[in-house]
Image 1 (cartoon, rainbow, N blue to C red):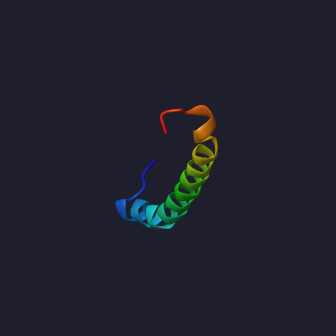
Image 2 (image 1 turned 90 degrees about the vertical axis):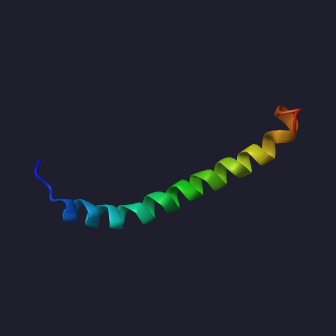
Length: 45
């Protein structure tokens, strides 16, 4: 598959904000979930 570097960087420029935004949402959900269950399941915190 011959894809030029400029095409790859252009695709990444479009994908990266979406990926980073999705990862931020997932991180927030995990943080809220962990916070919600911390007192019950993790006596160290």
